[in-house]
Amino acid sequence: MKIICLAILVLFLSAGVSHAACIEPDIATYTACTEGCPDAVTHTESYAKCVNGCISTWNKAEDEYYACTKAEREQAEQKKREEEQRKAAMTFIVPVMKDPSYTGVKPGNTVESSHGLTKIFRGVDELVPSVGFTTAPGDIMTTENGASVELKSDYGTVVVDEDTDWGEIIITDDDVITPDVPEGILDPDYKLPPDDIDFYLRASRTLVEFFYQEFDGEHRPSFNSCKINSPTTCIWGVIKYIYEGKVHLYENTPARYPRNPVLTPRAAITPDGTEYLVEVTKDGATSVTVLNGSVFVTDVASFNTTRVYANQKIVLPNDPDGLTRQELEASTTAIDPASVDRWWEKSEEMPIEETSEEEVPDEGIQKSESKQNTQFIIFFIIIMGVAIAVGSVIRARLKKSKGK
Image 1: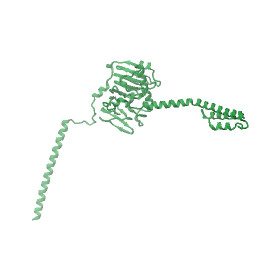
Image 2: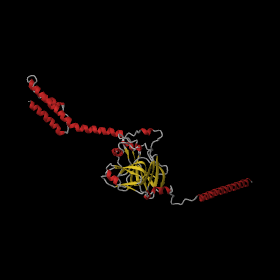
Image 3: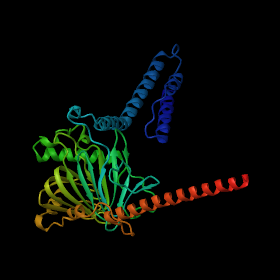
Image 4: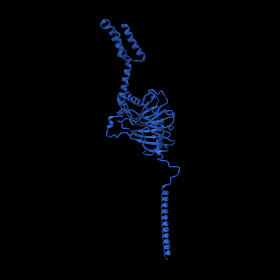
């Protein structure tokens, strides 16, 4: 009888396991086992052995269940820890931000000058920015052939060259705002910016890890806001995403504050008191030329990082597998500053606004025309006055003749 009860219990548990990876033992199974034992009064010894067998089988089932669910528990605990770390990392409360001398970084760029035709796409709206216009996260900017635009913010200046498409991204506590691209605005072959917060978290963690490897466990003074347990404090505010084209950037964020990086389909570029150029081809290949200071360039495919100094250039080809740290360093070459095409300076020399097809008259002609208009009005008033006077005289004589 005991053997039959144990067989039933084992069979029941085995059947449960066959239907699920891990099944928790059911107390009803233990109860059914003990109910199948001999009568406790007439077969006391057999009953005790039977119950002990049920208990032993029950304990074994619980141990197997615990062992089976161990991996699941560890995965759940790891996921919980990662979520807590992610929330902590995405908290943008940096003590130095409370410095009363720092007014904060504005979430946008203000147009300082514009040459040629530049368009801003904000959702379904198409805008033509003028001087003083402020961009916003989610905007897409396109410059036509022969056009350029200079923008300023609290943390530097940006000059966008002709035939360039770029957008603005901003990270919140737990989300990413990326440009909403209307159909037909951008090339369909463009690679869109990541909208997954984990991508930016990983990129900033990679940056922190590079600091520790490069500087023997000590943060650079200019990256004091970076924290190993809160890596996204390395980047804050608006992230510029370049789909294609050329951009000149001068970054002057105070040393103790987070950086404002540039993102391309191939690289995350974090400046460090820097003047630099970024050029992106249609397939996403990216080149970075540093004129002053230095930048940290992270390959977004391999998440390897290298540092590029003044008078150096790095090229990241369109490689889906990315580059190793050694390959990044090998892709960095010295340049002659005199050989750099300083196109952004040529843009500054251009007139701020272009005239229409109709020629604008000069100031002397405008004054002459204004004087002629004034003289005509005075002459017209005199003629009308004379006409009214003559009319009054004629009416008076007609009344006098009727009276006679």
